[in-house]
Length: 277
Image (cartoon, rainbow, N blue to C red; front, side, top):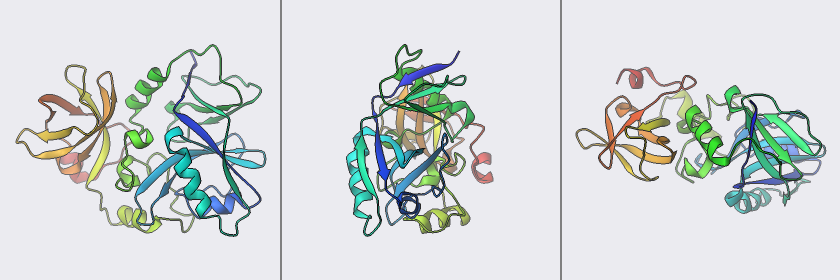
């Protein structure tokens, strides 16, 4: 059965004006030069040094691009994008639209709603942007959270650290969040160097707790010898994500004395050394 859930912690920014595509194209990690109607592109804004600041879905709507982003980050994102306008004929502003998700099927067409497939994984379902809150929903925000944790999908600032995290640590390569052919954008140099030189030392990976619970974000993960192995990020009902050092990925881990097991999803590509460790 198709499930829909409202995401109250999401917001929508509008990028309008005749230069909207070229403006975003020079700033974000993915190719947004021609976003087709009815499709979404997952992308990120980085620091000039190539560290994550925010990620969002870009959806085309008539004469504007809609950015489905974290509500808490929307003011910062709008401010930073606006600083780069210079002579570009664009306007960046919040719009009163609502974000929902749907999975386990396909949505029925609905007036006032834009439905676009989640570009990360087919099992992630659909992004739904609507003029009014959807009614008679089949699932809750918590249901969606469990679903995305099972898939191993990051959830913005819950799983990445601003001005610290690298895109490839969080699976942006495998999950279609980076274009390697679009040309320059802010932070591209480090992102490309990380990929082509194999510089990654850690990955954001799904984890489970032995007793169905996991510690709070920021809790240190340790090897059985007490060595630092990583840090817990978001979790719910014993499912979670954690940033784990690649050379300790296959070792037994604990967090506050609880056993924590790494679960590598099928979509994730790891270096051979990490697979063998």
